[in-house]
Amino acid sequence: MNIYLTGFMGTGKSHIMKILARKLQMQGIDFDDYIVETTHKTISQIFLETGEADFRKLETEVLITFSKKANCICACGGGIILNEKNCQIMKETGYVVLLEASAETIYARTQNDQNRPLLAKNIENIQIMMDKRQKYYAQVAEIVISTDDKSLNDISDEIIKKIKEI
Image (cartoon, rainbow, N blue to C red; front, side, top):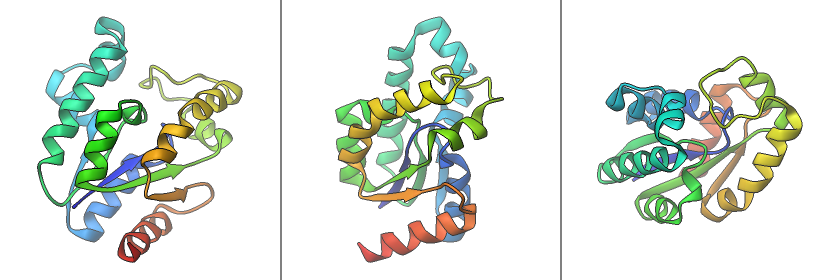
């Protein structure tokens, strides 16, 4: 089974993926990084040149590719849950873990990041985007972990414990 880390941007998916991959001796893949490597374009360039819809198609293609493998820990893009097909694939091929953080935490973690084309640069707008996506995250997640005020090691241990309980 694979482990799919979902959640809003800035919740720690990429960092947690690396730790889980090491601890569980599984392959780790960051979907956004994979898209950047294979297209030779930044996420911002893709959004600017061809739009969000084309980026979402690429994201689904990457998900399909890695869902066919076993023992992958996938750091998914924050919007992957907006496509029902993606949600179905993740649920059928692995554990779906939702990482959550407050809008204040996300703002603090991402305020200087220029590589997030959809990120609103203030707490209020981040909260609005989070609220719009929350129902999608809740529908697909089997495990929900808050990342506020926790170490990466504690978060990864909590995920491992909850997966073992399932």
